[in-house]
Image (tube, rainbow, N blue to C red):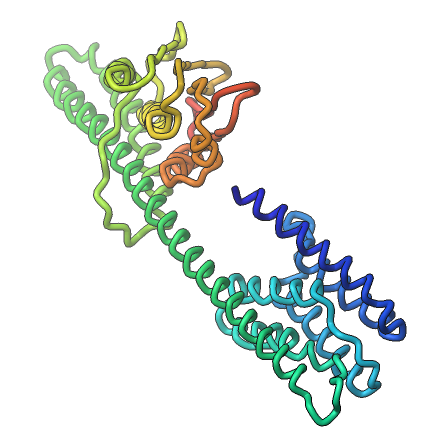
Length: 385
């Protein structure tokens, strides 16, 4: 939907720019000055985001065409050419006004947006009135353009607020997911600390009676202590950027809980086939298992919400080269699944936070032909966060 609207907007803008070019026949003397202004405005609006140089800040992107338009208007009035600003230039400046209100940081948004709006409102000054004593045509056109500029500025403000709310929501989801990760790691640490305590008590008991059994016990304590320290380090790293988080953590499952999760889903959704790896290591880190469980849980939830027409869902676990790969596929065709797969839902935002915190990678998108696929690659050894 957004892509279609963007394409339609580009087509309208280019079509109106062609009208501008055609209107240069009315005042050929103004064409050499109007052409650069129109080119600057179109380039500022249509330049793809991925190819813009870093030095082209949003402020420069809006100010350069707007100031150029204002200078051309002033020069046109002094020269008396009487060239009417075309609809292509006007629409491009209105788009830049929207961009200014939506994206420019607060201290500069007001002056930059005001400059863009002024460039639009004074466009009618290039038009010579039919009767010099009656500039009503210019005033009426300026009032209309001022109202249109106010609409574009209001739309930019609405989008600015919506962007801020979405960023805040994403931050809350990421913070909650970080706390969930920390809770899982806390359980893992508690498990090993308990084991260390029990083995230390056993060591004290056998120290005098069976000292030959003390070696394996000490090695077990050493191994458990090393794993505990590693998990504590990961916990600190995960929470390093979230010192004030207060959301309640939620419990997570592990690979042993996957059959139960799939069985629960089968009762109210499309049939799910679970294909575990034939030889998964028994010592997979607890946090990796919890992340794999969450991947499957979120993927099945998205199928239930947005791919209800799916006839079959496959959950596959792979293990190779120290990496656990979780693949969830469905053959649904529901259009709504596309937006979820491309990350508009907050569930995948939190899931991506969990996977990347463990040094993994998450991908989601359409399958060739039909259906959707979610793939998570989790390092099962030497986890780095």
